[in-house]
Length: 479
Ligand code: BG6
Image 1: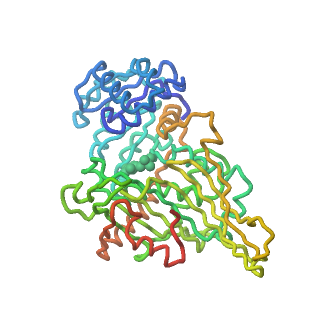
Image 2: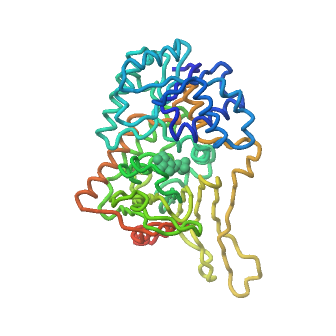
Image 3: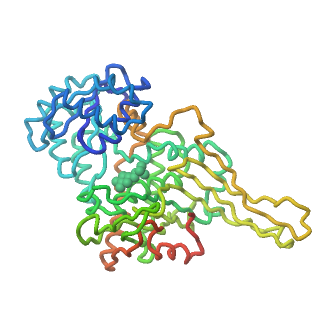
C-alpha cells in the first residue's frame, strides 16, 4: 500500500507518550519540512477540548519536552493540530471523529495507543464510521496483550478491519538509529559476517539497563513486569537482528522473514536459565531511592529485573548462549550488545609468555552510540622481560563520525514511516506471536516452580544470582 497520508489521527493525544514523544517528534519533522505542508494532525482522547484547547495543551508539552533550538518551530506546527473528544465506548462519538478527519481518499494514518480493553470498541468504531477504508493504515503501540492468547485477540480484532500490509506494530527500539545501524554493521561490511557464527563466536550479551523506577506507571507496570515490558519486545527484537540470516533486500518482507525464523528457533528456557529480581531501596548516582514495594505502596511479586540465558536452535548458533538482562533501578542507563569471539586456535606467542584475549565487539546503543572492537596489540618495547600483548579498542563514536546529521529520536523515524507507509521497521504478527510463545513458556515455568523475584539493591547490577548465571559458564557480564 504505497500512499502518503495527508492526515494523521492520534489516539491517546493527551497521554504521556503524546506529550513526551509524539508531539515533539512531529514538530521536529515539521520544522525540517519532512512532512507535507498540508498534513493535518487530528488528536483524540476523552478530555473535552476543542482545537484551540488542544493547541494550548500541545504548546505546553512542546515547551517542556522539545529541545531549546527547536522551540521556534512550535507556533507554525500548532496550526496543523485539531482535536475531537472521544469515549471509545460511545459508538456515536466515532461519527463526530470521522467528520473531523474528513475524507480519507487521500490517505489516513492512525496511531493507536490505548488500554488493551479499548482495542475492540475502537476498531469497531473506526469500521462503523468509515475510518478503516482502503487508504487507511493503523499503527499500534504496545501493550498489545499480556500473553499469546490476549495478543491474538487484539490482532484478530485489528485484522478483521485492516489487512496485515496496513497494520504497523510499533517497537520503538527499531526506530533507534543505532539499532538500524546493527544491520549496516553486519550486512554492509564483509568483515564480520564470515565470523558471525558458532565457530567463531563464544557468546553474545544484550543488556538494557535503566536507572528509572516505576515513573508513576503503577497500574501498568505492576501488571506487566520486566519480562513482558522489555524482553518480549525490545530485547527479542535486538536478539533477532543480531542472530538473523542476511535478508536478500532491506525491505519489510525480507527483513521480517529472517527475524521471525530466529524468533521461532528460540529454545524453551530451562528452569535454571532465568533469574528474576525486584529492587529494594538503594541509591542511584549518590541519591537515595525507595524500593519497588514502597513506590508501589503495597507488596508485589512483579519482577523489575530479569536475566536469561537464551539459545537459538539453528545451525549458525548451536552452542552459543545469548545472555540477556534488563532491569529498572540498575547501576546505570545503558543498552549494549557484546559479541564475544572465541580465542585464536593456537597462540604463537604463548612460548614467549604472552597472553592473548579473545576479540570482543561492543555495540553501544544508548546513551552513547558507539562501536568498539577490542584487538590484541604488542606492547611497544624491546621485550627483554618477555613479549607482552594488550587489548586495545578500535573505537567509533557515532557522534564524531557523523557530526553533521541530526540525531533523530525513534518516534520521528517511526511516525514518518507510518505516514509514508514503509513497514520495514514495524513488527509483523508472526513475530509478535513467536515472541509471546517463548515468553509465556518462561512465565509458566516460573509459576510451576514457584519462582519469585530475588531482591537487589537499587543502584546495583541486579541480584547476585544473575551474575552467577553467567559465571557458571565462565562468562563475566560486560560492565
Ligand atoms: C518502554 C517500556 O517500552 O521502553 C519502559 O515500557 C521502558 O518501561 C522504555 O522504560 C525504555 O525505552 P528507552 O527508549 O528509554 O530505552
